[in-house]
Structures are given as structure tokens and as C-alpha cells.
Length: 451
Image 1: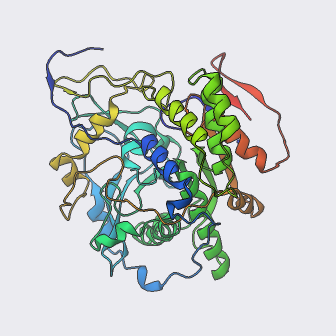
Image 2: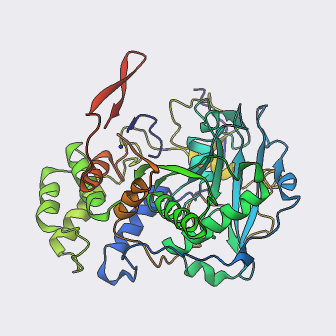
Image 3: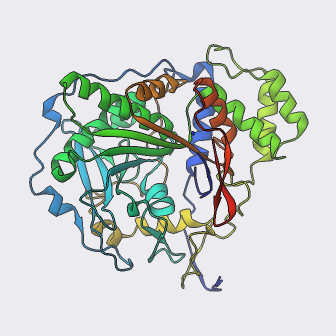
């Protein structure tokens, strides 16, 4: 989904600059590198179907008395005044390993007592929901180009829900483990368990939301995280014969759903948008086999064609193929004129600078253990990923069969997991069409397409 606000449903330039960091590995780069490893026979990644843990030791759920008030954020540095409450802090998910996940929570602008609770997860794997979801996409604030002050996002999702952002798994953003070997034991199954344990503890801390309608949303590799967590919730509700968590549905955008169609759809999208040559596209079509049952190493011809495609799109913002690149990552002394509608391609650097400020971390109750590394939008700490199913379609089908609402949406300018991938994956599900495709008008213009 990234940065394109238009979805398919299923300046004042200041001459004085200050130095900015040269970090900021992006979510799309992380996913691209992960796919390169995963598609190799020698990857060591378990690609079999997702298996939920059906029993959680009760000792992993702790008393949370008094923790909510300790987590209240009075005001973020440089923040405009708002009427809603916000919270931030840590939830321990494994006391023995010293593993704790950081969350940031914003209550709804209005009707917080009746509006649903929504959990947002970013993908990667290994990328931060603070970096993207909270600070660049659906959160209530955006960071100015000076890296010090914030401005309102008039499209924030907390106009419609109470929104919870989680940095997961441990090793992402401010989340951590005191047992550093934990970082080499990451994967889909462990992430789902930790996310579920986080929710059980968080709802103890915020009991007013324990029976609230609950939705899980996310983008990119969270196409795995979201259905896997939903499946885990569903199984534990069934095992307990009661509603532990009142899950009603999920939303996933430009989501990793099915490896074969995800990858094929990406290259078809690049070809149809003239981002790669016909010769390169034909080479990929002829020599590459992305089927999960084909565990042979790719041919030299396939590698050559995909390498050429990678070179062709190297200088394209693959989140939004029509967007400009960031050519000057320096912070400005005075903020540029902000615009939510016209996204600033250097926003990653502003967010990096802001979240690494001591006063910001103190206000957010973050980095309380004084980590030996900077906060990063995508983790350099997590180097191994143990399991990643080749498809999550069976989970989506199971969720729908159990009456949960499933919304799959796709930004039409995102080239990493593009609209073609989404359409190919939905087609694999062989669903009946209730409402045929039609244009969706907003203010008399076609701004959305509906599937």
C-alpha cells in the first residue's frame, strides 16, 4: 500500500540545511531482499502451511494494574494540540527472555467509547509500524522536514477507530529482547504467538476495550502477520468456547498473499507500465518458474532477466512509481510547507530524525533500556527468518468461512506487491462475484476502482 492514497478495493525550499542520517532501509527493499532469499532452494526457510500454537501458558499474561496511566503520553514534542488521548509503552510477551514489544495507541477523535479497536501492523518482515503506519500513512501526525515538529494528518484512521500500532517482532524499532539469540529465532509462527500474547496483556491494561469490536489491518508482509494473528485468535476463542478477543474482520493492503502470484504479478505490472523492456519481460515469462512446488534453483537465464529488471527499476520509488525520489535527505532549519496529499519522498529521513530524539523517546516512554542501536524504520537486528508459508490463501478462506470480514485492497501505483498480484491472488481463491467491477467516483472524478 505504501504511500498511494488511491486504492483498488477485494514549498518553501529553505537554503539552510542540516545534516541528516544516511540510514533508512525501506520496507520495500526489505521485502525485495527477503524474497530473493526465500525463492532460493538453499534459503532454509520453512515454506509449509502456517501452524498456530493452540495453547498459551497463562504465566505469559501478567497483571497490568496502574500501567495504563504510566503509558499516557501528555504531549509529543512539537505536536499540535489535539483532543484525543494517546499512549505508548512496552508490553512484556516473554518474561524469561526479557522480550517486550513497543506500542503506540491513539484513541478516536470522537466516540471512543463506541468506535472499534483496530490494530495496525507493518510488514518487512522486520519493519516498523511507527515508521510507516503511524508517522507516514494512517496515524494522526506527520513529521515536518525539520525533524522536530509535527502536523496533523486529516486522513488519520482515528477519525473512524481507536488505533493501536505495534512494533513487531522483537528487534523491530523500539521492541527488544534481553536474550539476543531471540533475534536469530524470528519467523511467522513466533511473531503470531508474540502478537497474540501482546494483545492479551494489552487488553488487561486497557480493559475498556476487552469486549470492543476488533479489527486487524496491515500492509506488505503483514499480509502474513494479519491473517496468522486472526487465525490464532479464532483458534483460541474456539478452544476456550468463549470470545477472548472480539475479532470481527481484517484488512490487508498491497499484501503478500501467495508467492507465485505475488511475484508473477509484480513482473507483469512492471512490463505493463513500461518499467522493464519487452525482452526482459519475455525472458522472465520464458525462463522463470515461481511455483512453490518447483524447488529447483532458478536458471541463469531467469537470474539474468530478473537482475536486468532490478536494474531498470533501481531509480524508481517502487511504492509509488509516479513519485519523485528523495534527492536531498538533509533536514531543513525551517519546515517546508507540509502537504498530506502531495507526499514528500524524503519523509523517511524526517521520521528517523524525530524518533531518535531523546525528548521524543522520553515522551513516548520508548527505548527505556537504552538499546545499543538507533531506532530504524526496518531492522538490521533481525537477520534470520525461520518460517514463511508460500501462501496464506487457506487462512483467508478459513476466516471467511467463520464469518469474519476480509477486505483486500491495493494501491494502483505500488509496484512491489501491485494490483496485478492482488488480482491474481484473489482469482486463486475462486470466489463468487457479488458486485461486478465498477468505477468509484469521489467529487465527480474517478479516484477509486472497485473490485
